[in-house]
Image: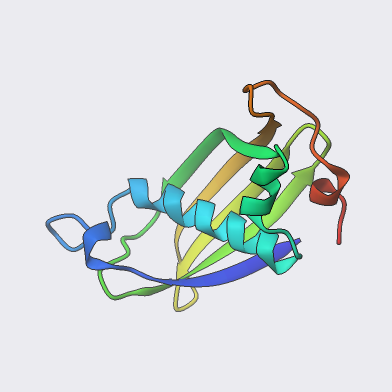
Length: 127
């Protein structure tokens, strides 16, 4: 499964040189994952109300070229693997078709007590 969203870089996401601070890419990835879930009919807030908490197990990014204030970025999110235990995503951040960054994350599911639990099948089976 793949999903793409557009994000306009806001001033406060940049450093003194007007370049997006590296930590913001992880926020972009999270927003992209949430929007991907929404696109297949699942609301993250509702999942949390049901005690389904999706947490980042691991995350990484590779920076290729800078994004700047005012840029419109496309965040491509791909589910690389989905099982009852985890969901692996990959990300590409593009501006006008040029890849600026790439990333990966592994998401796990826990309950309110912080204990690992199996993901509901609605999250790992193709819609």
